[in-house]
Image (cartoon, rainbow, N blue to C red; front, side):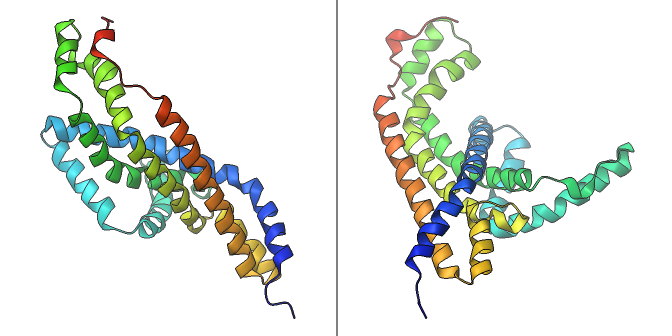
Length: 239
């Protein structure tokens, strides 16, 4: 009996490739949404908005203090309850079992990402040279224009390497999406591994795919980071 089937590893790797777009899609969705929410959390904390800053602090504490697996299991069971509540309150007839696993996993990952990226984003915003902000104000820009055209673009360059690391972490974290019945790379590896009773080969193929994706993202990020240029104060213009 052949203990390790090397041919199966190659076959499983090819069989898993069609599910890579799903893994990438949920990772990109969660990272982008999480970054936007994290930016909002960072701005609320920096502005010390009454009530909102306290609520944000509690949410961040919860998201950081509970395992992402528990959050997934909680949210996938909370989604039908939410639909039933909406149906009861507004007389709608939404299908409880039609809740998208992609959205449940995506929003769960996004909120978790926001909790961790908010501090990185806040640090990047605080690292922006005050002279650039003052130059924008002297040109007549409003606070919103300064934030949109100066602070965020400059902070994005500072935070970019950290956010790339967050995205790589999200790629690996997306492997937990199978618990909400989303069929992505890891979930399909479990299926084909159980079909042939070759779990080692199936999960080794899975590891190879995630490793390859991580290396690819790192290489792309390196090129993008080299091309990103910080905006110069002399280039500021009135809106």
